[in-house]
Length: 49
Image (cartoon, rainbow, N blue to C red; front, side, top):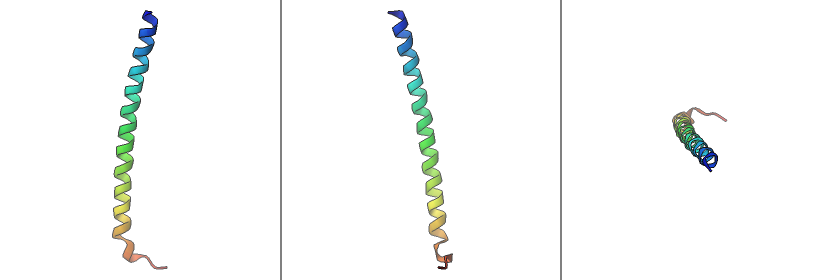
């Protein structure tokens, strides 16, 4: 029974760590997307087709 609790503890801790990494990655990706979108909008008048 103790082995099952240890396994659940490790799985829970791993899930929390993975969730934190995913949140940080998502926030960083969102910020970079906003910055790139703002740059495109700022420089759209300079485009010639």
